[in-house]
Length: 336
Image 1: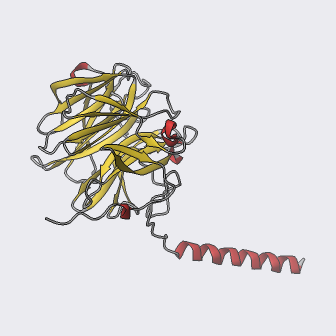
Image 2: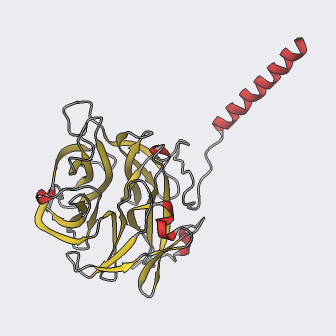
Image 3: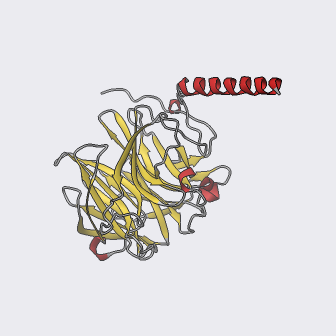
């Protein structure tokens, strides 16, 4: 009995020492992207920023996304990074309201948040797809919030249907002239629309147009050499499907369907993911990162991120699967 107790004590002390040691070991810095693998923040916790988008501000990237529980919508989180590999948790940029009468109270949905900076007002503006508490996907509204600081806290402003149109999956795009646009799924996701925003980015103007009708969602957009490239997903719930690429020389169209830009294993299922944003990489010429979510409906918090480089073949974007990659695939852009 004494021998057993001594052995048990030794095991316990050894395990305790190991745990103490493990807690003091700093997290290993990440130096590459590994699409689909678990991605941890500076505290060693899973990054929880789904359906998100990025903003580059003051030499720092900020990643905004849906904070999710196993299924619940818990607000908008924000992370910061200097290198795109390692992320610091900056907390909740827009928490759910504790007021049961609020449009952003617990029980509703905040999805696909995107943030842009307005140089005229010096404010940070957040748009998102909002569903009201207890109504499922009935409301189909665009929500807007504002902040003096990039990390927030953001103050909820209001929600609406742009020019009376339903608004679900969405993204924001700021063109080179500073004009901002809201691209959104309407008419039960059978239409994809674009509307120009007001000068303060807080509301929709009447410059609103139908891009195409093809039951698409999850829009992501970028611009290169005076061409706009728009990638969308089909509407199959949480199940992955084939992506499509449209191009145009004007945001208001006409938009030309090019085909599926994905290449490699499971390309016809967008590598088991769904588009959310396309990031221009600072300091690198013609460098863009395609961002997608690999949704896990059984545990949305553990949905994974698929970040892949955008390549160009015959002047058309191609997104090819790779298990690991880093930013050295692009040469640094020379300073002017």
